Image (cartoon, rainbow, N blue to C red; front, side):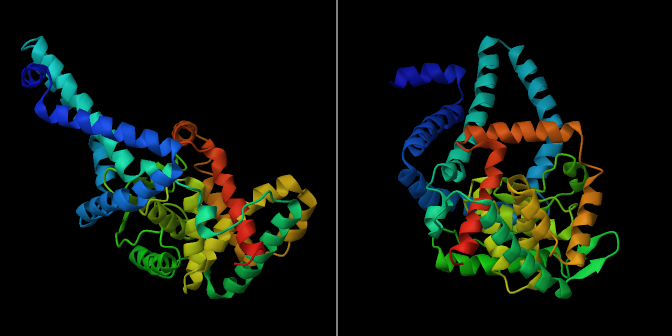
Length: 367
């Protein structure tokens, strides 16, 4: 065995051998997670939570998004890898193989990090079971009833919200204050639902937010740095909701529809009026399209009750988004995101609509 490893080490660096072994362990763990939601839940709560918290604290002190910095620097890194590999290959086949093995082992390590920090979260029991919500098929009447509840609360909150011409609603505090309000709301939720990880970590603001908006991505969680990242170019009510959403991912809520619903609970569970407003307005948008598809007449009747200032906020959002609505970057981004979600065992982009079922059950079956 010793002789075998010595010969192997001639072509594969020792660190790479370790990385490949970690990769085999990660593959075995993920395979078990696929067939056992209970095992996946154990990994996500007891092991992945430790790695997520560690990554978040290791990068939390950095004032900018490390993930964004790596992405911006990726062309330089790629060129360096090509040059280094070429130079090594000129020294002989063995050096070329060692170089390729090293690169592949880093890729395997990143994949292993995904499994041990975030991947298991896609295989855990669904959040409706954890929250004690009975999710069933939704009728048009139930959609309309839920929409009426959301509209009623939006209308009640509108007098406490400041609206600016051509911008819509204005967040009355800083991004850091938003994060703090989310942390406070998450603390209350984690007391009620222990599966929600307790974590005190920042949400990084993306420097290239304007360019990121062309991909229609309002935020992203990067498992390899533990960072929740926010596209600050979006309107304030979207920013607030997205902050809560990315913080849900940071706590191991992997599925998009579940992170969306948890963000909703975080926003409406806050004592701050604008947090609540952001939650209800985002939920209004989730409910509107399904209700229109189910019953155009009920849709028209229901949305007619919406406060004029809230309507103006939605109009401002639509006008803002016109610049970014149709472009190739968005199509590529959606295709990549859809493929990623399908590979994780979700229903692809369609899974985002599942949050409506949870909202209807939550509001109509006793909040």
